[in-house]
Amino acid sequence: MSGLPTGTFTFLFTDVEGSTRLWERGPEAMSQALVRHDELLREAVEAHRGFVFKTMGDAFYAAFSTAAEAVEASLDAQKRLLSEEWEVTAPLRVRMALHTGTAEERDGEYFGPTLNRAARLLSSGHGGQVLLSLSTQELVRENLPLGAELRDLGVRRLKDLSGPEHVFQLTDPELPSSFPPLKTLDVRLNNLPIQPTLLLGREREVGEIADLLRREDVRLLTLTGTGGTGKTRLALQSAAELIDEFDDGVFFVALAPVSDPELVASTLAGALSVSESAGRTLEEDLRSYLSDKELLLVLDNFEQVVDAAPLVGEALSGCPGLKVLVTSRISLLIYGEHEYAVRPLELPDPGSPAAARGTEALRGDQTLHRACSCCKHPFLLDKAKCPGGRRDLRASGRAASGNRACRSEDKAALAPGDLLQAWQSTEVPYWGSARSPGEAKDPEGRNRMELHVARQERAGTLREAFRLLRWVYPGSRGGRPRRRERLVH
Image 1 (cartoon, helix red, strand yellow):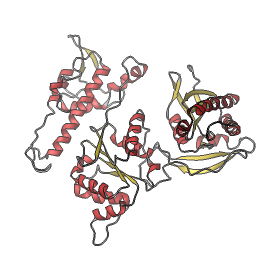
Image 2 (image 1 turned 60 degrees about the vertical axis):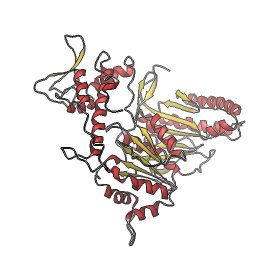
Image 3 (image 1 turned 120 degrees about the horizontal axis):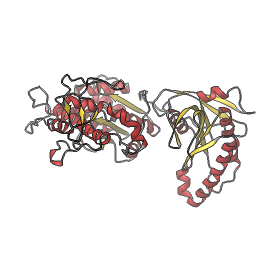
Image 4 (image 1 turned 90 degrees about the vertical axis):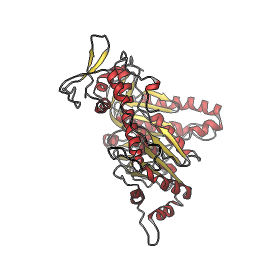
């Protein structure tokens, strides 16, 4: 559909609960049932002046100019679905969510936080249930259909890890009204922090990480990658998606402030509210507490305390219900570890509309500003053609569109070839004869592990800089170093 109307809408999101099981039990009957399901939903939406702007499998996405019409459509749809005689082994139970706000129209679809919020509200409900956000409730509470009521379900934390949402259930005498507790973060014990922004563009990675942690043979999963690739945010979102699968909760342990491996046990104990008892070590108390728990631990920034990796291994060996998700620039190198490499977000095709919209923003991307700290001359992205016919990066003392400037008095040109030289300069000494990570030191007092982390960080930052250069300036000849010139694999 193209040319969608813009403005403020009430969005109705729906999907079929347990559709995967129904497909497995009777594919032919389910296929026929979905055809009828689509007809009933579309009729109900259009009967109340709404329009369906997207369908995906058994999911429907519709928009209404007024919240009252959206409420009437949802009630109408649930009544039609309830009265239908289904040929599948179980009736189709459809959950619905209503949320009001603005959305951006792009390439015939709606995008934006409003739709993300509606999707998260939908995922917290159950088949046959209709949920409303506070923004929708405020618009319809004085204008409900005859017999309909709103039940206050309280303020809940949805799995997008953003701020809490006040949730309401729409009830009607002709529809079921009793449902299990909402599938929100409040149902299980957790200390997952609220995030200031939504996680966008990482749906595939979140799904892959969650699927790995669901496997019985995966109990320790380490997300590895250079700094700034989004490992922490990805781990938090993956943990939020899995919260219903761990009866004793999900706990986040921030190790960024910790530099001494000896303090990891006390940091873990603090996150889990475990106190040291007389006659036992704190490590023993932790293992005793976790021994009968079904729990997911998220250990963030473990590269700083990698010498504490044996503590994690001992906890896993003595606690069969424990799983651990780690973020680190390097792997822990302990038995049973599975590694998931977190890569930068994929960039769109240079000729696509998304690329055209994002080019100017990428010219001020902070990745290149970080990369310039490894080079002789700091610079800003400023497209210019040199006499030789290739595009170069020229240093500038001015910031464009409010981006932070990397100032340089001599304004010397930094071509992609200079960036390659900076890449080559990231090699650091490595003492293979050292018996332990902390034994050997370089002239600056850094041990082998610290040097390894620093090398990965700087080289990964420069690799990302080259990637951006090839996208923003496709004609650049300095993009990718030859294989023999790579230092990090």
